[in-house]
Length: 118
Image (cartoon, rainbow, N blue to C red; front, top):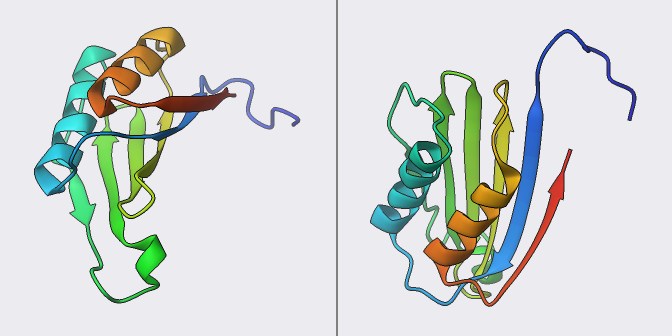
C-alpha cells in the first residue's frame, strides 16, 4: 500500500481473537479504557458502546464500541455467540505492538490471537 501522507505519523493494529471471559457493556468499556491507559494513549471522551440486540442476525449479536483518543481511536467488535473479538487501534502516536497484544490476550483470557500491524 502506497503511503499517501508520509508527513502524518500513523500506526494501525488489528487484533482478532477467541475469548474465554464473560463480556457485557462494562467489560467492553474496561477494555477500551484499560488498553488506552496501558499504551499511554490519551482519551478525550468516554467509550461509546452499542449492542443492537435482536436487530440483526443472531450469529452477529454482540457489541460495537469505540473510544476517541487525542491521537485517533480504538474500536472493538465482539461476537458473543462465537466468543470472537476484533480490536482496531488507529493512532497518530507510536505505541508498543507487543504490549498491546499482551494486554489484549490477558484481558480477554484469549485462547487464540492473530494480528496485523500496518
